[in-house]
Amino acid sequence: MIWKPHVTVATIIERDNQYLMVEEFSSGQRVINQPAGHLEEGESLAEAAIRETLEETAWHVELEYISGIYRWQNPEKNNTYLRVCFVAHALSHDEQRELDDGILAALWLDRDSLITQADRLRSPMVMLGIDDYLAGHQYPLSLFTDVS
Image (cartoon, rainbow, N blue to C red; front, side):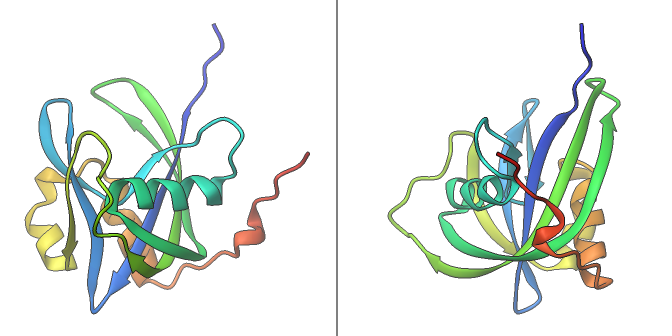
C-alpha cells in the first residue's frame, strides 16, 4: 500500500476585520473551519479553493495569493493533510444557493471570537492560516503550475 496525504485547500476571506468561516459537523462535533476541502481529480488547486468556498459559503471569490502551505498529521485519525491556504476577496453572495451537506452555516467572525472558541476549531491549521495572513505571508498564485 502506498501512503498518500490528503491534499486540501482552504480560503481566507477577510472583510472589516472578520473572516468568512464555516460551522460544520466533523466526527460528530460542531466545528469551525475556513471554507476548505479536498482537491478533486482534474481540477487545479485554485479551482478547488474557488469551488469549495462557493459550495460551503455561497460566496463567489477571487483569489489573490497563497499565504501558506501546511502539513498536519491528525493524531486522532492518523491521517496526514497537505493544505494550501489561499487568500481571496469576496465578490458576491448567492443568497439562493444551498450550502454543502454537513455545513451548518457560513459565519463572519473576528480573530478574538476564533481565539475564544479555539477548542471548536477543526484543526490547528485554522488559526495558523489566519496568523500567517495577518503576518503578511504572501506567495504568488504562480507558485503552482498545472502541467498537461
